[in-house]
Length: 222
Ligand SMILES: Nc1ncnc2c1ncn2[C@@H]1O[C@H](COP(=O)(O)OP(=O)(O)OP(=O)(O)O)[C@@H](O)[C@H]1O
Image (cartoon, rainbow, N blue to C red):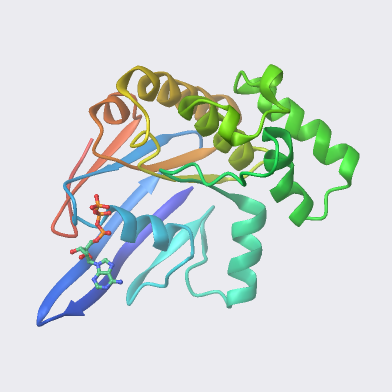
């Protein structure tokens, strides 16, 4: 349900050409796919294209069979808000809000009524094992708990696609593995596609699909 067709996004800097070149791949619904590869291989560039935060020079991104990369900015914004969730390396929770308020935020941006937003956020926090921490602010949570709150925030609006950039990079090894177990379970259980950029072996070990990049090109898919 997520497809890249011959995606190219090139950057010219100081006479050097970098970016991603002619990348084609497909990730089915309910699959946890990992973009792996060394630093500079193009993982973040591909995530930005998938998240419609950038537009390709050539090729297209398809979501559920619909070409979305060249939609007008307003339509792309709407898709990001309603159909996509984002998880970042540094968690990116709002520090002055509780875990519950953080998870409610995207629902409120969508116009979900307060009572329903609260119920859905509570369910999402419960699913990631944070029901008893819902009134804590991010600074009162461990790194692993903050990332689970970020996953709840990404999933609460019921997205088709969750994009995660190095989600375990700020966690120690003991927390990275269980976090990825949770993501893999949620992908299957909710039928949500996860696309994760990472070079962490704990992440790659839990992937349903691995796409290895080298110098901006897809070197191997397994
Ligand atoms: N805005 C930009 N301007 C110029 N070059 C860029 C830009 N963004 C990325 N690049 C180049 O494109 C290539 C791919 O970068 P990208 O950030 O996608 O790699 P990455 O695999 O995510 O790396 P890392 O693991 O270090 O985050 C790199 O050579 C990078 O220097």
